[in-house]
Length: 306
View (cartoon, one colour):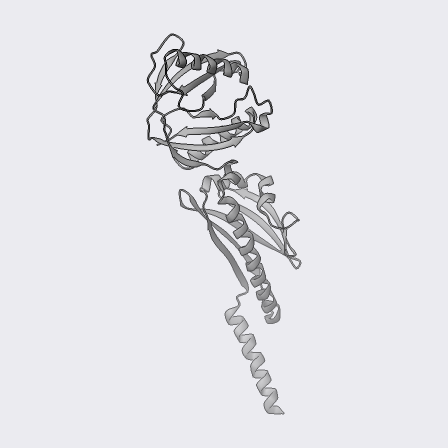
């Protein structure tokens, strides 16, 4: 009987010693993964509280597997989150660490206090394992979300090349943002000039609208042709670098959608350190004067880049 008692006592002592040796009083938990996203883009998107709900799994915002999370502080390339698990509050830090231009490492770290009681320390160790598993799942969900450019910019960007080499263009100033009929009037003038010179259109009409000041806008329209056409007081010949690099994105929507998309396009160009040798422009796939529902307008946004 005494032998069994001493064996059991030895096992308990060894277990306690093992707990103190292998389980520290402060258990550090770290979850790491990478995402195909630029660090600046990830920071900008995650600063928007509404975005967190889009990638967070589950029905309830900032809750997962019975654990509550709270976004407590936004910093430069880092976000502090408070974690409540089984009544304990744990402070965690989600870091955005650049790997290269289009890859960011996501690092979520926190520390769980295990104390000096061996039984309590062992229980906290098991909780730390469960929390690590939850953090891994959440971070994987975030990585997948950030890795899709449509979630960052609102559209998918395609690397392409310039296929046209010569354009004929015209421009006009307005004391308001020009509508589709005013733009179409410029396009029809171009088409008439192209026909009068026995030339052919080679692509959809191009459009670029710029704000001159608070009251005035300038619209420039152009059409690619199969041959160079002479300049006049109204029409100007333009040349494109055929085979040059071009970013393309196709979107559906009206004027507000197009303006917002170009704003995000500028973010994309800055995020990935592109340089633009020419102005970005719209290719008007849809005839906007015939399709009155702006939600059905299809536009290809083109951004020449180096």
